[in-house]
Length: 219
Ligand code: 5RP
Image (tube, rainbow, N blue to C red):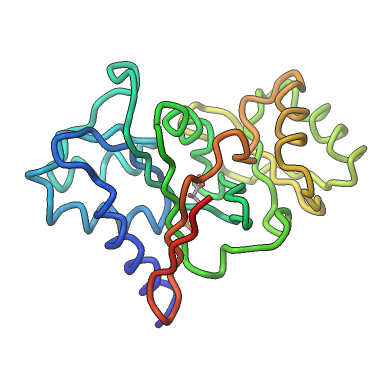
């Protein structure tokens, strides 16, 4: 099976977590696109979705699913999203698709975060994938300098603004051995909107696509 087929496998498997009659939280990315494709088959049972990006909103609406604003929903039972990396504790790097801020907001509404990913995303230590950080423009140079002091090389992602209109910096060279601590530290830096470490909002479970089928990791 190729990577695309593994993504389709876990996108389909995630349907079992969608509770009929409830609003579901929907992430962003190519794996989530597969989930949305699968969601079309049960759309009559889905009351609505809170979406984490313009991209996912458009795809959900195209298959006839009502998109509900996050502001209208006090809680969600489940949020389904992909990851750029996930470790054996359910800590993740996210934001490869630049949707990290809205993803963290929707994840924060949810009782459970179900991560869907192909097996290439499972790592022992986070940091091989460049860490995305959404930053207020005037703070970009000082945020880059702070990462340099931690041994990271941060670069503005060329030609990309988030749905919130901000740039992303991608940080290479970090070996993230303490995801909770590093997320908390970066969150304190002035101008950081969101860091793509999802430690406080880690996955509750991960459906991992492997050639042998879906492997479920529970955290
Ligand atoms: C978007 C994300 C995605 O979940 C992450 O980039 C994984 O994407 P894909 O499923 O395309 O590999 O965090 O901001």
